[in-house]
Amino acid sequence: MGNLLAVSTKRLTKAFDGKEIIHGCNMTVEKGTVYGFVGKNGAGKTTVFKMLLGLLRPTMGEATVLGMDSVRDRSEILRHTGSLIETPIFYEHLSAADNLKIHLAYMGIENTDLENVLTLVGLANIGTQPVSTFSLGMRQRLGIARALVHKPELLILDEPINGLDPVGIIEMRELFHTLVRQENYTILLSSHILSEVEQIADRIGVIVDGTVIQEISPAEIKEKHPAGIEDYFIKVTNGGKANE
Image (tube, rainbow, N blue to C red):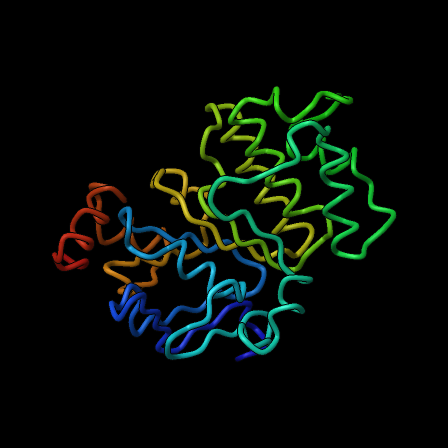
């Protein structure tokens, strides 16, 4: 079973100044799927992502990413994953392509088709335009391009459609589906746009107060909650029973 999982956590716990932010968190993400990670602001989504990437060390428990331990194998995990965590930071005076070149140099990778990657995320033909002139949506697209450019096995994306207009959201949805279905990527993403998560995810994990309380498919949500995913989310995050 383990070789079928891209991500697995067991009793994952993180405390800051003696206060547990994440506690006893168990989650599983199957390879070749899109996993939607949802929860209220402050529920712990970004903290979990940072522990998976080895950017934070768990206080207790363990996280396995692509068969590797998040603490012991941090460097290898970063080589095989692409991520967008919080607001992406770039070299403002450089172009999108130059920012990607710097990232690839840092990763020790050469000969990647940068224009193809920029086209995939909707940033074709922007030439030498400096990132300082980019809109929020363009910056988000570039952040996704940077996560993709070294051709990782797993994408961990924190609010990837933040700042995108409706057309951009549709384009990203189509891109994510293409990456999973045709390129065999695995995508773990968070979003506050529940309707979009419902459309794109194969499985949804709900985190409440630092614990994943349920992993469920969109089909199961539709079956058990005819009123829709928002009704389900409100019930389960407010302490109600998800099967009501």
